[in-house]
Amino acid sequence: MRKLQSQGVHHITIVGADRQTSIDFWEGLLGMPFVFEQPNLDNASESHLYFDPGDGRLITVFTNEERVPDPERTPTDPGCVHHLAFALSQATFRQAVERLDERDIHHSGVKDRGFMDSIYFKDPLGLLIELASYRFEPPHGFTHAEVLLEAHKIRVECGDYNIAPIHLADAIEALVGRSRESLSDDRSPKDPYGRASAPTAGG
Image (cartoon, rainbow, N blue to C red):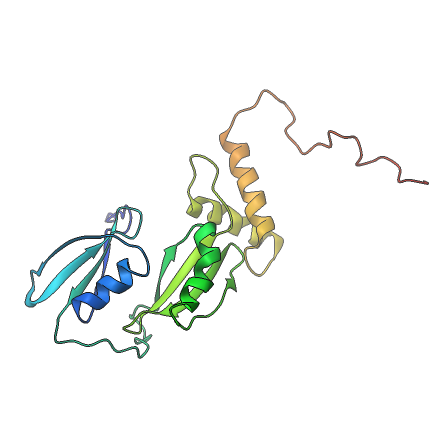
């Protein structure tokens, strides 16, 4: 028995309402280029819109001009989608509250997630959207997921409740230490100023 190995999200498809609502939300609010459109090949009454969320992959939407937006929260029963999260740079994230407020879009405000910051709001069809911004950059050659895996191990070893900045910093140091060679025999932390054991003033 062998696995069917995933190599990333190919696309996510959402059932939308009318065509223009989808374009105005995904491109007009979230800045995702509207890259192509064709009929829904399984339902001739629907159109199929494709948007680039920023990484070259796809968010797609089935639209029908007879459907109208319903802002009621989408179901969160088992098997349903709870929310979709999209990555923002810190520069953009710091503008998010203001830019949602100027459209009178109700939102959660900034939520502290330890390893990232988040803001939540509903799309015009009631789907919960998260705007997420990492608080760290992975070392060259590593992914955010690899840093989080390492930080998780450190957090569990420390007995802490959730991943915090200290775990991220230690994870990045550990990954760099394991993946980069050095001429030094001793790579442990040092005090180049010689102050760590120096007597305090007046001591």
